[in-house]
Image (tube, rainbow, N blue to C red; front, side, top):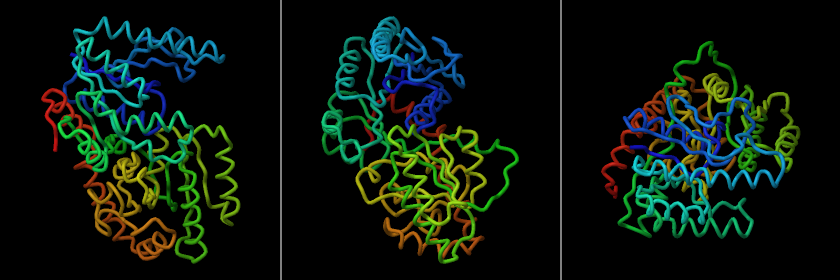
Length: 395
């Protein structure tokens, strides 16, 4: 019986957090003895080697749209999108007797209703990935988008057989609406083995942040923090920013201008859309990894994917003592946790800890241990397999 992925398209391309979670979720299920199948209904990229049916690290995936590469013209793109839905529907009908469960990720509310109807008609279990409290994200301002987010955050629980939450906030929110819904918490997950096979790693003097253009205020916060550390002679190394995104509205220019105004532009390295293997090496070479968490529902409800990768890199992490960090890490023991999301709070923590190289190493080791116990995809794959086949609510 298959465990099928529905929703977010583009597998296996893309290094964003959503796609990484999909990859690791299904790698974990495969390692746990399940038969995964990824269905990708939309053509989002240009890939000369694109195939209708292929495999990625042993996981079979199927593209259902007529044209496998993203069409340039608007009309062609939308016709191709329709063909993707039709191809997916035909595939689900053909495979209906072999599908045990579908895991839906990244859908709109209308898509959720559609897939729920299909699950009832075709007889498979529908489980949702719930990783963001979208209605609290201020950058999603369009009226239709915001309305869709509100509907999902309020009603998604009535259109599924079970749910995978990423945080305690989303667990509590889910159970406050539907206590009887089968639920499992799968935190940010990571492939720790990828970090063990990188060669020629040399320690370099830089602090590092990895994130997307959707977090420009956080990027500016980090640049201001680094500027203060340099101005007060608390740190003499560089700052490396690994930023992903397409920069449709000049966001990269915003970041570059901020760097130029800092006074330390020669020491702030901006890398954009870094390939995953290169990104791992950058983590391993850094002195300290930064992941600021704001006292906002968006950050508290989620679990930053990079925390798993930071733990795997066995480097000290600095963040804020908010949200999910409270459930896994202890300040000064397994991470460096500022009391609040302010330059002053982060600065005071770093000013104190940066000269203590031995303590930083101990914190890094303990953080790695916490990550190994909680964030490895293999362990969570077993838990998810058991949840899917036993379908017992976790309260």
